[in-house]
Length: 209
Ligand SMILES: [Zn+2]
Picture 1 (spheres, rainbow, N blue to C red):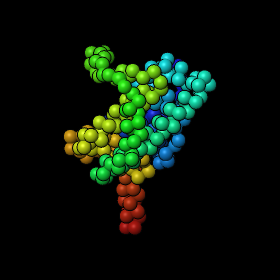
Picture 2 (cartoon, helix red, strand yellow):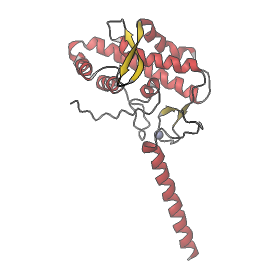
Picture 3 (cartoon, rainbow, N blue to C red):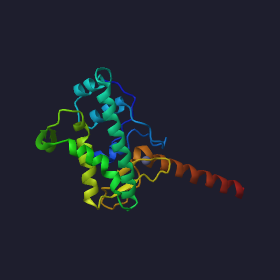
Picture 4 (cartoon, protein in one colour):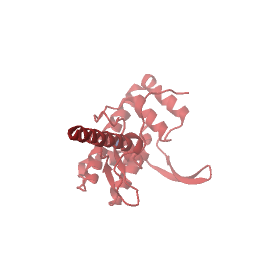
């Protein structure tokens, strides 16, 4: 079984958002650069490639380093432009034309079609690429990004934790979701708030004594 200590956090609500968040640890706040292994693991975690395909892709840095390097560059450009786009969407600002260039580049080289695929008892659309090269690996991410931009009313948000850099789509009925996830930031915030209240009370009690 592939063992990886990579943190792949899929809380964005859309593939393009999860990719923009990756790889990013909520506490670090820094945008780490993408490695070939990280990219491969992300594609596997999001079911863009199977586990076997992921293993074969990992070998590509030995068998065809040039192709791996090119795709990694393209993926990094795509992710960086996504971060600019999501920031603009979260702040209800205009998406600048040059940011969508990396998305259009991927869309251009990935001709394909949608196919209905049954998983368990659930039907979903799956993109089947005609392209033989590696660019199709980014096609689903680019399409997800394009959908998000064209929807116009997508509620993209930043996590309310200032130390967390994750984006997410607020699908909640009240549109008041604040945290990337309760487990990552929400509970931490609650614990901190509780500790604050508790120490204030203690101090107040101490002052009164
Ligand atoms: Zn967070």
